Length: 73
Image (tube, rainbow, N blue to C red; front, side, top):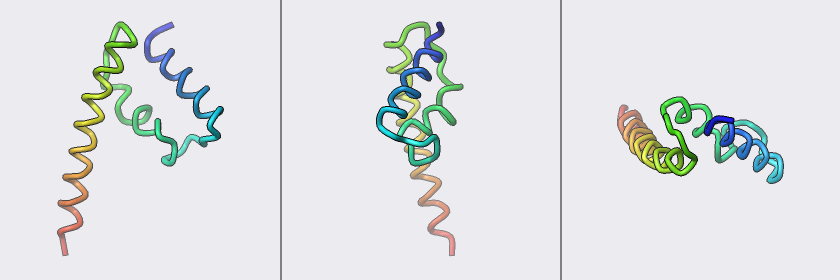
């Protein structure tokens, strides 16, 4: 089983256990829909480190886009 398959299995089990639907209210939504394809890793530890870096980039970019679009009048 690949690292991404293991992660998806964990996310699915955790989502079911906590009662999350698979929509944008799920805390793992961005990881699965936006970030997972960008991460290449051989181990789960490596995946989680790269995920942290990608999340930081994604959040900075999202904040920049929000500020940029909200300043338009």
